[in-house]
Amino acid sequence: MKKALLLTALFSVYWGNLNAKCLPSTVVAEVGSDKITYSYFNYVKSQIPKWAWKNYYGENPRKLLEKIIDRTLILVDHERRGFFKKPEVKEKLEAFKIKSLAYSLLNSELKGIKVSKEELNEVLSRYPKEKRTPTLVKSLKASLLAKEFTLKREELFKEAYSRLKVFTLNPSSPKDLVAEYKGRKIYFKDLKPLLPEKPSKEEVKKALSLYSLYLQAEEKALDRRETFKNSLESFKEALAVEDFKRELFPKIKITEEEVHRYYESHRKQFKTPERAKVKVFGVSSLKEGRELLREVKEGAPLKGGKIVEVRKGEDNPISLFVFGMNENTGLLRLSDGRLVLIKVLKRIPSRELSFGDAYWEIRSKLYSEKVKRTLNEELSKLKREYKVKEMNLTCLREKDSY
Image 1 (tube, one colour):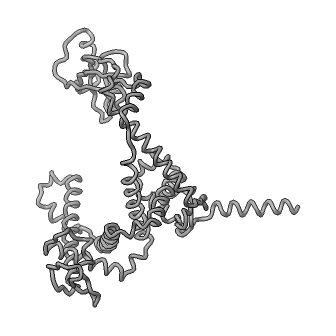
Image 2: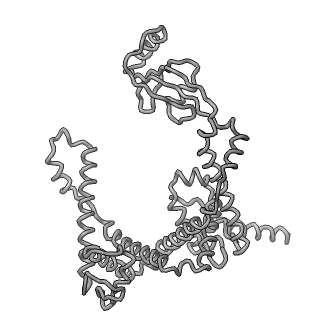
Image 3: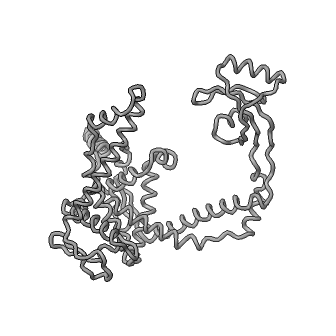
């Protein structure tokens, strides 16, 4: 009886944990002293297009977590090595922070822009009734919305600039006082991340407007939002990975001997695809198509049409049709509903590529393989140096919607 009760309790705890909703702050993995939260995992996932999530990750959250762990290893190592203390890197981070917060505030103000029925009808009335199609209405609405958006955006930039007390638009020294926002001094060095080396007055003015929006965003505590924190972490990660590859890739070399050796041992794999020259002739109906097909098979010439070249392995209906049939003439219904008659004029068989023709394909293949192998070796070293710990993986089993 006691054993049964104990098993029931353990079973309840297990399923309770498995089905529990994870909080944004729940840690799903640790890399050294760096924590990967459920919030950050979902942020990264939200940046991945649906097709990529399906094709590259197989919709498997564990694969994405492994990718995030690899990138975090590089980030942690770069932080330890002082990468983010470099002036040029600090400037990039500052520019990202200012722009992200400024545009976040700007977008929140622009979110509510709409086009009224009156505005739309007024513009629509300039067109004849027979031309007022749903497509035209949609196009006009989009055009009006874009115009309203642009005007409101310019208005917000002007308003942001008007909140400043400007001293100069021609600063020359990093310590030059350019403007003031509610008593907070803005020096030329503060604007430098937003400006080219020799900025014009207009560029300084635009940078000031952006900086004013950034300071307003800080007042509204937008920098404390999870979305901003995650985007900043992701940007830092991207900078570290970019530098990691910049250090690593020049070390990867492919010799002429390696390319030649690979060609000799795999030469049968390097062939041109089968090709075919094809005439495509459009027909208006199935009856017309069958009649024309009969005539062509009996030897009648096919006048007109369009000649195209297709290759075996191409993912298009004509190629699939040509290399999937035994005959040289046939009818094909395209995805848009059109019916075409296909006549194969010439089939060109596959041939073995010479070393010269296959050279760059082999070199590219060997380079990609060596890059992958070298990356894995380097990441393995980092994993030995920094402790990696996965936890709370039940979070990742939840079906998060896009």
